[in-house]
Length: 66
Image (tube, rainbow, N blue to C red; front, top):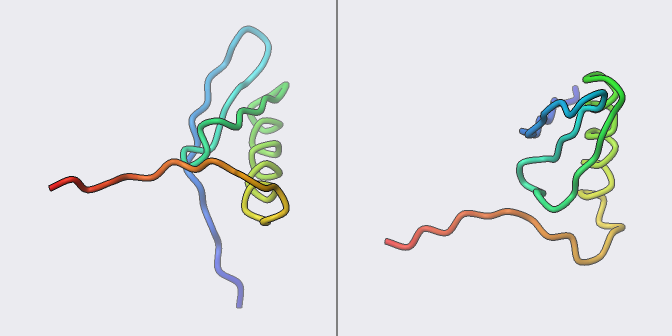
């Protein structure tokens, strides 16, 4: 039985294109010609960034200071 993974992302429309990035990886943006196309690119980006094949991937984290 497989478990479904999910990742939060930020997106917006800029004229005729949809832009977005994965919340945990704000330095890596992608775009699509439609909202659905953007989601395809975001899935591909997620796979690339979490595969371990790309060295030095920067990731967002939260630090508790108190």
